[in-house]
Image (cartoon, rainbow, N blue to C red; front, top):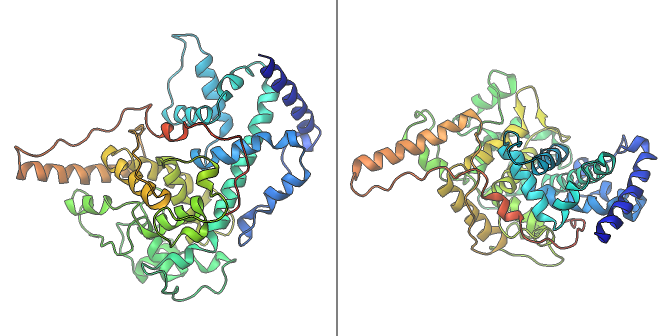
Length: 418
């Protein structure tokens, strides 16, 4: 109790600092690392000018940002969680699976944080101060990851990374040369159901066709993947393709760079050297659907021609849609466990299982995935009616990914630049 009182007193001091600086908000021209080749000046500047009290929960945000994903509104998460947990039995509102999952990841990651946030129910100013710091830390780590991949992904676009990008990029800093104007990037961004050729690229660049976040881009698959373009969605051939989603060299190399260090990207499973990598710093012991989806979003942005980070890339493409599309792939529990095991092995260098993930509804296009897998299962059942195994059911909501963030974290610390 005494510790709680002391914490509240300290946070009141934080509030005083916030309310005397720009109306309690963040600077209007906060420099982001997105437009730099590989630096995170925003974090360094904030540390240099901030008092120790101000940066306490920024460290929390830098840790939790990679677990929750780049599009989580932490204020909504805390409001939802504290309201639900403080409600009397029988007065609980309707459960929001994604917010409930995010709330569980947040408070389980930091021992004592759950009770502390609940104690602030009648102190909204203090809570808002904490939420601003958490948000700042989450934005910083998203920016750091963007900068890490920006200059490196172009060199990982060939199955053999020793083969240079052809044609080469005139500049690694200016992204205008990427996206649909570069044949290699265009092929990797092309949705799996489309032919990857000049005619298709032209249709996308001229607006005849549109890229959307509910389509699965080719770069999430192995670089030698063959796509049965033209086959109906229920063709069993698509089930074989979709089983290879998130097994692509580019996403795995990127995950290694983000969590083990850029020098690890082309090395063996679990390779790491030098200072602690981000996986160790945030105590990432196993991947989950949110972390995997976050990596895919970062890779897509690095391949795109968009210069500055934004949720939208033109009038039709939305990165948040892409995040939840990848997240929704894990509704297939058996496939999801295989992918988590693969990422754990390749990136972390260990075989680690994963519990069933919750199964909220995803974007409607994912019905193609379910239909293809169902068709493959039906074909197998018709071929061997006495030996075919039943199709695994989607996991029950409320379990799963939260477990990967539940380990006791070390004292909050800023994530090291990798």
